[in-house]
Length: 309
Image 1 (spheres, rainbow, N blue to C red):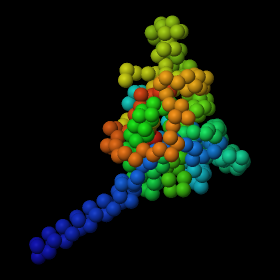
Image 2 (cartoon, rainbow, N blue to C red):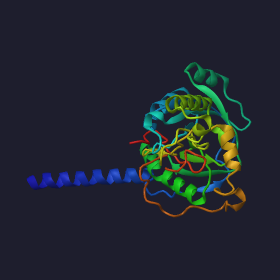
Image 3 (cartoon, one colour):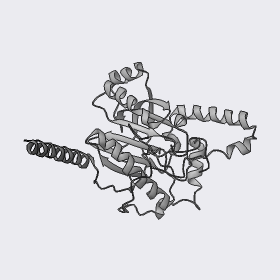
């Protein structure tokens, strides 16, 4: 009898392990990740969002709140800071739902419901070129896997080509998590609250360090979004996102002027794919990059619901 009990226990354990393994594989453990530079996965969009400062791992509640209002709408997360360079409490992100895309108009009833719940409304333009990839969104675990697998690839791709791509966006729709980072007009992807934080940080910096305006400006990286440090949680999920504050004028000016440090569109092979396998991200979703500055942002973001550790 004891032998039968042991055998049944062993079989149960093996079945449990097989079930867990199948679940992880189904969630996207071995899915191919192909990073490309080309057209964006979305057109001009209008979306409802809430802006927060804090660790990216806390953004899950905002996704739930947004989905509860518009369960049929695509969700979007925008991550502005690199959690490896910016302290968790200072990381900035916007989470919400896409109300309309292209020339379509937003549903007025839904719009009012979001506004009544404290959401703001903003629009992102359609750009011609972005760094983009996708990952299957089949289970909750898919989100965690995407943070660990996608952002390191994005970071590597951007660094190798010396691109200026930020901030990092995650769009959840049609069973896919679509990742993108614009290569132009980056300033148009910064919601108004980011500017307010930027001004506050600038004032605090001037007050605490008594640095002159010129010196103080050098502390910011126009492509990133938050104060630079010397160097995504391992979170993006990343992209990890930027370490200085970016203003639209600065971002556009830095991008146009990157003739020596960046790659122009004409030099890019739009059909090139990043097929090389990189070890799982050191730490995060929103990937890492030297950029919170326009040079190379990556987020681990989590972007996402569990991006940081």
